[in-house]
Length: 253
Image 1 (cartoon, rainbow, N blue to C red):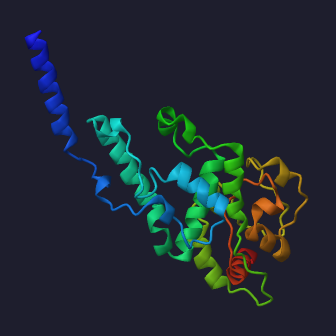
Image 2 (image 1 turned 90 degrees about the vertical axis):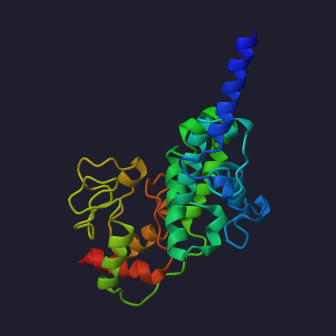
Image 3 (image 1 turned 90 degrees about the horizontal axis):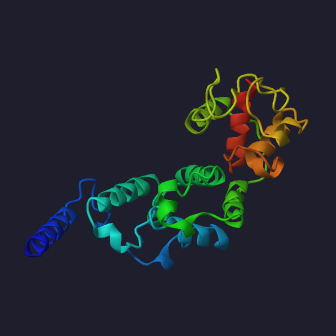
C-alpha cells in the first residue's frame, strides 16, 4: 500500500510539473476582458454575433473557458496547441483591429467552414457535444455572406488592372486558369453559361439556373451568391461596387 501511495504521489507530482510547461505557447497569458466585450461595434447582426460568441469564442478569442482536464499534461498541451493555432487564424478579441479586407476574408471562411461542417472540428465536438452548430445557427452565419454593408452597383467603368490585383489577392485561392482548385477555372467565364465547365461539381441550383455570365449577372453574383442561387457553394462576396466592377472588367478580358 505504501509503495502504491508513493507511486501515485510521484505520478501526481510529475503531472503537475509537466503542466507548468507550455511547449506550444501559453494561451492563458492573453488578457481576458469579458465575453460581453466581444464583437461590440463590429456591425455584425446580433444573432450572428451570439452564435460566434457561444460556439467559437472558447478557441477563437481570449475568453476561453478552461475545463478542469485542460490543466492536466500532456493532454493540456494538445488543448493549448489547438487554441494557439485557432487564435492565429481568427481571434474575435482582435476583430475591431482588423482591416475591412481582413474581416471580409474571415467572414467568407466562417460561412464556408460552417456550411461544410468543418467547424467546430470533430475532436472538439467529441468532448463538447453541445458545440455542434444547429441548422438554424448555420443559416444565421450563412447570411453573413449576403453582405449587409454591400454598396449598390456603380455605373463607372471597371479598372481591369486593379481587378487583376484584387483577383490575385482574393480569388486565386479557389480559382485557377487551369483548374485543379476548389472553384472552377474562370478563364473565358465572360459569356459562358453558369455550370458550363465539364467535370466540375457545381450545385444543382447553379447548373439549372440558366444564367449567362455578363456584367449584370456577374455583379449580382459577386454581390451575394447565396441570394442569387440559394444552394450556391461559393461563400465569397465583394461588398464594394467599384471593386466588383474592376474584377468584372478583368474577367471580361
